[in-house]
Length: 80
Image (cartoon, rainbow, N blue to C red; front, side, top):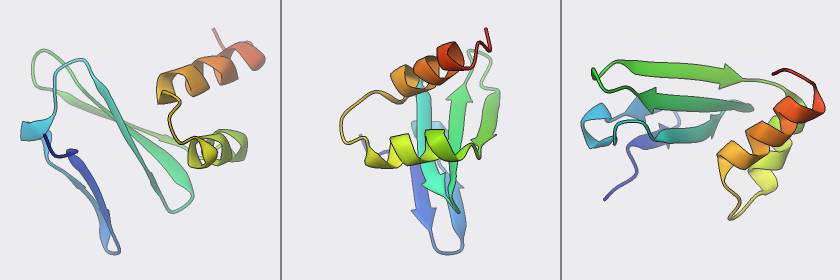
């Protein structure tokens, strides 16, 4: 299946019909990590992370799961 998030020079295209429910998708756009999540009721949630440390770690990560990176950041900053 094609990845449902496509980054283009003019912006980010979201193909929600290709998204699985309860799965986190992401992309990097304009030095921010954009997170997308589709709920059971087909509601699409979007989040933006501009924290430089997180953006840099996501950029450098080739195989690590984005959720693990975010969880480490939450634990590090005591954001629970």
